[in-house]
Amino acid sequence: MKRLLSILAAALMVAACSSDRDHILKVYNWSDYIDEELIGEFEQWYEEQTGEPVKVVYQTFDINETMLSKIEKGHEDYDVVCPSDYIIERMLRSDLALPINMDFGNTPNYIEGSLSPYLTKCLKDLKTGDKDASKYAVAYMWGTTGFIYNTKYVDPEDLRTWDALRNPKFADKIFVKDAARDIYSQIILYLKHDDIVAGKVTMEELLAVPSQENVDLVEKYLMQIKGQVAGYEADFGKDQMTQERGWISLNWSGDACWAIEEAAEVGVDLDYIVPDEGATVWFDGWVIPKYAKNTKAASYFINFMCKPENAIRNAEEIGYVSACGTSEILEHFRDEEYDPINLTYFFGEGADSVCINPVMYPAQEVIERCGLEHDWGEDSSMLIEMWSRVKGSNASVMTYIIIGALFVALVAGVVASRTKKSRRGKGKKRR
Image (cartoon, rainbow, N blue to C red; front, side, top):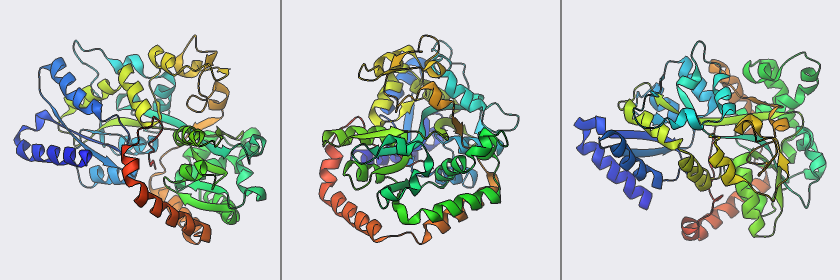
């Protein structure tokens, strides 16, 4: 209700101030993907820094393509959006993004001072033609793709390969993200692993250059494991893991953090692993769209979100990992409970032996076998059609039981779910 009232109030203000667009900042972000208290704090901070008032109109989306369509086809005048890596590629290639103004006068540039060198490299590795993506986008949150698993039923040695999906002892105990691009990427890395090792093809080529042959190979494999899969899920897989209805979930590291913490509260031991064949690293980033009206406030907003204390607050609130790599963030998340790992790739020199949660911050040797997903442009239709065929006849009895149980639980627990406050209590539907 609080969020609804906030949205209505913002909408009324936009209507009343339509002639004063310079003092309105329209932000379009994923659901549950920010510490919302920072929105009001930004308004105050911006006026302190610039002497100008600003009102943030904050709206949310759940699918990348929904956001993109509103800009590409609807020419919506959002000032800041938060697309995923491959959509950033598409926006830059389609001339749908504006450069971020890094001149903040007397205000510190937190973007250049805070962003991890690894995420800066990821931005530069995007396929954007002659455009330097780091001039047009600032990474916000990031993570890996892997398996969440129940340590009581699953030996981690069985998960050193993505082919664990085909292991008969996990039948009907597997949940898979309803995310065509993410699933395709992991499976093609498994199917072509020998070719990668032999130097016949690179991981980068497999993830960036689509072919009908590779799509067909992945489809054939996914059809073979359909009987193993209990359900394809957008956001309920981690709940199934905490309730031990699933033993394995092909998922994102952010959801893994949430699930591990929630499961521990009820005595269930979950963990997370990235298979040896390699996996994908993903990130979302702030972008100023082509039709933005308040690019000054947009740049300041992105800069504000990169302040180390704000990056920590956002990460704590939503359960994903900030792309910022400052010493303050490193110290905040240090935890002697974990064995030391090498994180120099993310935090720089001096971070070669850090005790920290390896689900949040994978060790360098894990990152070395990971790659970025890319936009396929018009060839994306191959992926969409393949995924539709794979899921088309996979609605097992177990799936319907789970959906029904979830519906009942949601109705019965709606009040409690609104009042519960947990650092890992939120999730995000990417892709």
